[in-house]
Length: 257
Image 1 (cartoon, rainbow, N blue to C red):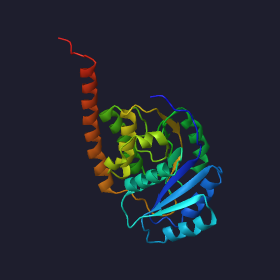
Image 2: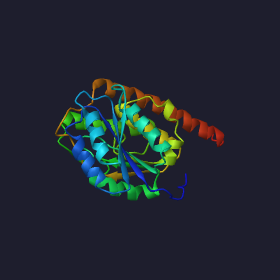
Image 3: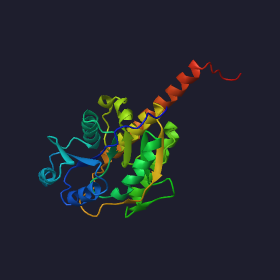
Image 4: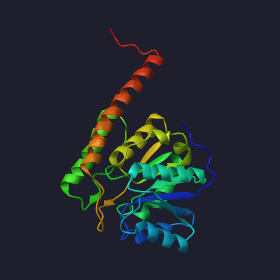
């Protein structure tokens, strides 16, 4: 798929939050300092620690900060989808996913913006140049690494870090993906979005990043999220096989006798 001509260069950084009050001021300060062309959308799921109220207070001080409040904890995937819809409705050219806990280094933003000039989706990869993860317990690291390997083997998707949540999209990719049909969260959401972009023929690029585990707050990872992702990979793997079979049938492919 070819890339369109660049027009509006505005970028929106979407940061979902749930009980991230301690991390929010620093991540916003660092992101907003990178460029005057960057806006930030905080999507808060009615945090019990007052994260949403703090985001509103900070937004009154900086017009480049927007806040979207949701009624309760509805999951990472739906938070990003709400952010995507906001970005498309407001004419942003590039749309980022970023965690609130500073595990995604804001200093990498310029590298994403450079790479997206020649891609539809840029993924910040922890595993493209070895393993670049700091402060994770070995069990969490192995889960993440082998989840990506498992996804590549099952689906054929040529992405080294299938569960990465640090990404930048071109708006036209999100415009042409049916966001209403995506209902997964956590690992599952990250996997499904990459798979949909790949199977639709969009150009995907990975750039190396260093992932540093949060030092403040609590991880949102759960056993339910892991189970959802494992089931999803099987479903995507089966869909990939069906798609390849249909393509071969349309091209006149026949097995050898």
